[in-house]
Length: 95
Image (cartoon, rainbow, N blue to C red; front, side, top):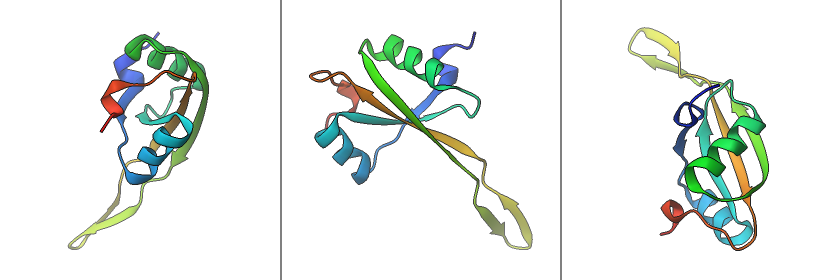
């Protein structure tokens, strides 16, 4: 079993995610590429002590980038949108 800090990499803060928090009580995190929805749900519940209703995940391919004559790709990554039970919040997302 993976440690919860290996599953949840970082929260994602943007205008769109702030609107999701305010309107629909949904929080967005960058997660490990090989984490599944059940692992993500358990990790969020353990770290923040909240009740998770649902987890939606999205995979992103790395973009091609150039540095002078060298070409490469940014790493692939995965995002999870977590819906919490009504009335519960995560304090770190409050502005």
